[in-house]
Image (cartoon, rainbow, N blue to C red; front, side, top):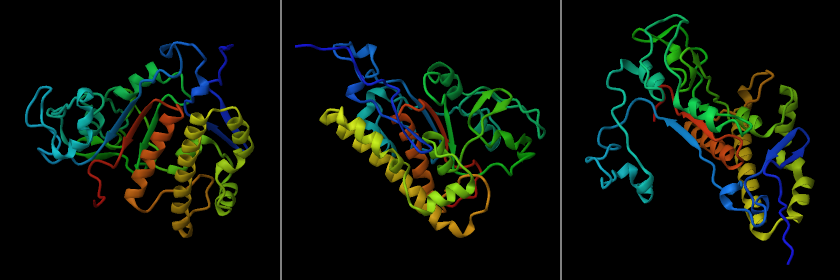
Length: 308
């Protein structure tokens, strides 16, 4: 028997007209007879933060007792099977003052400076610290997502604090808030390509074609050299990409009459539930294709007027 230490490169991508699609980890990417810990099969460490605004109902999240044998509350029951890997941390915001400080301090622990002006000062957040450590081997060091447009909020938004403290949960330094992206189409194209003007994107949307349509030949060539398990995993991943894109296209059609003629992608669903689900899907795809290993998601603005 002859076994050669050859493998499909981990950074293999599929390329088509204006599209580049990263691949998930396949068995064909692991060289034969190589220790798993020294290959891409060793699961990478990932970090994700999901911010839920307006506080939480006491007793629904926090267990009644401390220690490793605590009883999972009803809302935590779905993750009880991961008990050995779960730590519940609470009461991080006691010394803080209002909604603005809660948002900016959530991932930093820093008490922000009181100001209405541009001289904001808070603290670097843990997602950005982690991104510098584990995010340098991926195309995107980190991915920041949200559901509400914060661009119109300037000046003071809460007591004596600048709106900048409420507009993002991610800070790359004490003075630099990181903007959050709210448009699923923008995120999708950032992950998988498809550049062009507003007119070109509008034409592609009207043809109902997926980016995968431009990758058909590349996919067929790749599948010929894969085993059955890899083919199954690749098919599942491509179906996931296609389904997410289909849902974005549906949301664009629903809002087609209100689209502005601007050189920017569109695709923000009117339904908050669908919007939130799509952003979670984007984070999952980015993890699966190893486009990033660090995500932060602000589900809504603290003091949001959204009705749930």
